Image (cartoon, rainbow, N blue to C red; front, side, top):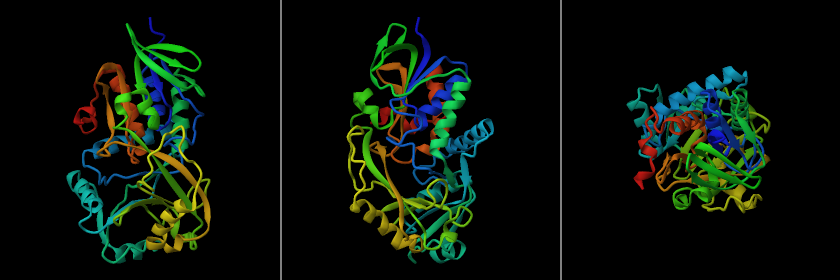
Length: 374
């Protein structure tokens, strides 16, 4: 008989949540992580990750977001840790931009409270913002950020409290179907289980070759600066932002261990990456890309650099998630291709992966994410 009910491969944002949700339902579960918990080699680090309810990417994300907020609050109550910080959220761009129109569409479809502000109105309310005069902003009060390293650690701890077994520094080298489920091979040995959950982030294609063109890693860089006027960039005075101008910048107020304003740019320098060989050094060109956004829209944050870090996006062709059962192995559930906007959903993706592994289906609407669309 298989040793485990389920094995989870990769214990970053999605995998740590899957581990917890499987264990809390009584499954005998093994989690395998090739690095430490947490680690900074993938997509689940960087102190802060945006969460927002006015979701410009597609209105179908909103019900999942509502559940994600609930589950983050449940995990906070369980662990007595603050994991979710509400600052309000700004989606900004030209009135006709995909960001503004998509945000408004999500708000109107799901009756989400919001305001549409001119650039001048936004600056008057939050002086750290200096948008150009032709831009507008959708202000939604439920936006904010989650703390990724703490989320991962606490999901794993919660899973362990329900009996999950966790192995770190153990790399999965492959998996095969087994008469009673799956067999997973690692650089330490092999394990059998009835079900397998693959949440390997940028390493997804190494475990599911058909994802090679559907889950493509990309090098990203984050920058923290010491604001020239720190009082304008505190959580109570500066909402998180998602900005299209036409480049897409995103960022955060001062918070946490790195006491600076944080900014990133989607598809930073368009660098596809091998996750095992990605360039993790920081170059002048990396800072220049991000300084441009600061100087154009947040000049009072244009102070000294405090820190810069690399991370990885794993992009799908349409930048919607990949969440489904393996088309050739229904005992395998996979989640990948979160395309730089996935971490906020980790709590509910964990619940979905537990559903798929244990029951082969989920009550959550995930048709937007099915592999069959390609």
